[in-house]
Amino acid sequence: MTAYRIQPDIRLDGYLLRGRATPTVRQLDEVGARADSLREIRGIDFVRSVDRTRYDVIVLACVGGAVQAMLHGLAHAWRGAAARPVVVTGYVGVVYEKLADGLLLRHGADVVLANSRHDADRFREVYRGVSADDGSVVECALPFLGGAPYTGTHTPYTVVFAAQPSVPESRADRTYLLRRAVEHARRHPDREVLIKLRSKPGEHTTHIEELPYQKLAAKAPGGLPANCRLVYGNMGEVLDRTDLMVTVSSTAALESLHRGIPTAVLTDLGIREVLGNHHFLGSGCLASWDELDAGHRPEPDADWLARQGVAADGDYERAFDAARDRVTALRTADRLPPITPYYTPRTAPGYLPGILARHGLDPHGEPLAGHAEAPEETGGLRRVARETVREAARGAYRHGVQRVAPAIRRWGQL
Image 1 (cartoon, rainbow, N blue to C red):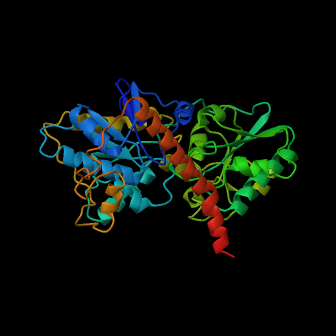
Image 2 (image 1 turned 45 degrees about the horizontal axis):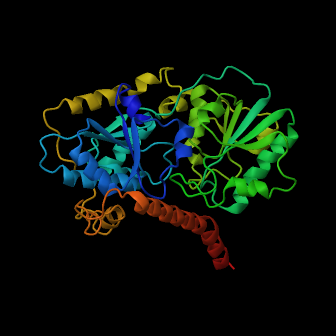
Image 3 (image 1 turned 90 degrees about the vertical axis):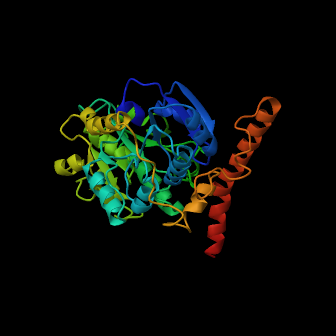
């Protein structure tokens, strides 16, 4: 989506870095991700591929550690090259945690996209705070905003609770939120209450979900009422029928506000940094389930919306003009400087090597022995066997995250 926002008329090759957060085919289809080619690949093989294939722009849409590893790998692969692609990345979503950590892991890209004026100011402040170049930061907007503006109440009136994989984290808090959504449905039988889920059990996003709402709903006393159900699918399509968006701190709130849909950011569990709802201070959207049960519809603050890059000036497409101009200027430059991340073996000798090693790279961005020699692809029965083993390993990992780890934590509290 970011690539098409920067330049609509492109050929797009997609590489899915193999790891815990690798999206499934279902997840890709759900969000409408489209590319002219698409394949799963190891990090070191990605570096090899772009080293021998000429691209104009590379968009690194990964978690911070993966971005940092690819920046070092590409810097090593392109050392001394007369020309190279423009490298673009960003810190997408509601940036409420790991601000410094996430941004410094992205430093070194030619362009670091900020979701809003608010984020651009914060991003530059972080880079200046460590005496790193902040010229890469470019203000734009979230790449997945859009859809028809809200025009009025639907039939039936539809309330959507946008769930998050790791916010809140505890079973008690997640059970509480599910219970309140169910109770809202029972209090308002003329309304439809949809619990919008990010992934199915066994799938992952960038955040690990140890207690999926699907499992909590299966154990809900009395089950879910007829007017309350779990839904998947593209968030944009769900928003097409939404009259009230409810969440703790999901980016879905920004998507909803962009369309002018009444949006509530829950205060039931407190306004706390660990929940991320502190990001919405001053928005006018903070509310509790008790208030929503009584018919409250939050009214957002216009100045807050403008600083967050949602519904600002009513012209979303122009939000990417600066990014397009910056990428065009870099593409047409006589020569681009080397990629120089802030983190190096000198500035972060106890942190950087571990990040790079997870992607098969040494502290200087060169493939580690044993990783470089492994073939990029295998064929025939070996490939089938390899896929089977990898799926089994993923299943074991998910079981450990979702079942074993919580049990061990509970035992530790006894």
